[in-house]
Length: 238
Image (cartoon, rainbow, N blue to C red; front, side):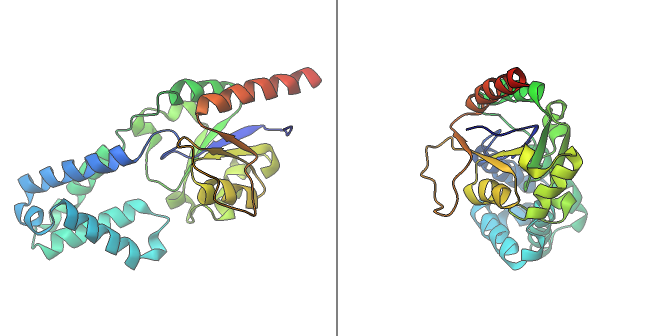
């Protein structure tokens, strides 16, 4: 397949690192913190109940779907308020959450592959999540990070893809978006005019009939290999 790629936008959660272990650890750490600082909240909202509350807050506030930090903080606010806790605990509780959220463990291939890709083309992070690449210690690989909270709309909305392209000063057709989610990442990018790579680490079956990804790989290393070959071919042709 032959097309011109001048930059890459990269999803983060479940593309650069798995989120499930982070989410499980957040629940454990938050509950332990509440047991120490607000025992009544820990009793009223053990892990399962806190998870149910979070799901309800997310469902009740669709207008905040682009701002996961706001939804998480609202969940904590509800839990503290309903358990009669000191509301001065809200900001410290959120900071406990956010510190754990940014302790990421990348997939084994991810860091080396990311470094290879970033040495070839500009790489921008494009995420619906609320990770902070500086706090994760990974921001030096990226020219910028654009989150749905900052932008005001989440993938698969075309506007967030277009905003990234504008910051890269490139037309969408010269930007390759890479992500794990068939709809949010791949379909969203393609409908916005970008090229798209499905990072299918789990070997899933492509779920959409009307679109096919431009590229599909099971590792970020395989994408780095493809870019090496593709860009070398372009350089030779030029």
